[in-house]
Amino acid sequence: MQRSGSYVAAAVVIVAVVAAVAWVLTTQPQAFPGLQTVGLYKFKAMPVGADGPLKECVVCHSVETGGPLRVGPPLHGIVGARKARTEWYGYSAALRKAEGNWTEADLDKFLTSPSKFLPGTSKTLIGIPDAKQRADIIAALKKAP
Image 1: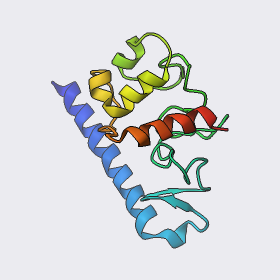
Image 2: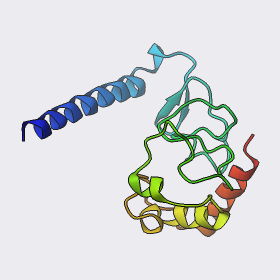
Image 3: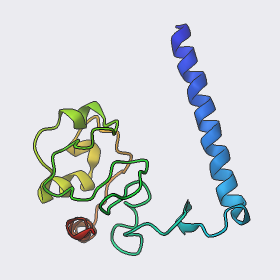
């Protein structure tokens, strides 16, 4: 019981730190000259893909070869790649157990509803209902530099 209380306390501290950093970044832009933004998120340089169909993806993922580490695993070369391929990333148990490679059809289903395609996934995306938008994202992922 005491151990779970420690986890809760640690989670509260982490949330407080993240909230404080987010507050500083959004209310004190003069403290960070030259930062570029995508929505509410601020980056040192505009992320590759931020000006096209991948604009929502690049907030959490890099899409270029050797791109910077972000919250989510890199997406460069994801079409045709093994699922849960990035060794250092903490994938959900559901994705670690998923077999095979990411096909265009799998990506389309995952982007439609991650939790329906892969129950237990930690992907926070609710889903993209627009088929054309999903197709544009997949096409852009195939062409990512």
